[in-house]
Picture: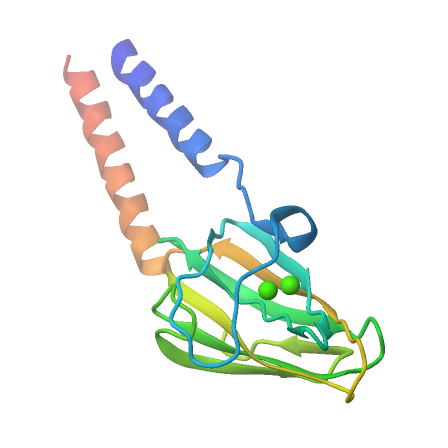
Length: 198
Ligand SMILES: [Ca+2]
Ligand SMILES: [Ca+2]
């Protein structure tokens, strides 16, 4: 019986450890991690795939637009099994006062730029805040592929942005929870009967 209790206790400890394991949400910052890839038009290149975890995941960068060309930033992210994105938003500022539009396609089912199925069009007129309308995002691979950057003619322009994604564990259905509770109760009752017979 003591051994059974010890085993149950160690099992419980493992479960608690698993449930409280330190989450490692993504904080991608172009200033530290490098400029994100991206190109005008329907390219098909693989993108950096960011593995999201529970908490606030962020992707931040800048979109300089000079006579040398426009900087496009795209990325992919993975929502792991058992987790979901409950809230998502994009905050974009117009650093130089002359970026007129920035837009991305938000696609599901692919880590390739512009791959997968269009889920949402993310259109902004900086300074702007865009709140994603199709949350929650279930476990899958997604890409956010830039398709537009516009500026006032002839100006050296720049904008800075932050995408924010709140990830949470999927809460089991009450019916599943009650089955788990019933199974645990039945197991305890059987153990007690076995102990009293011994
Ligand atoms: Ca950039
Ligand atoms: Ca870029």
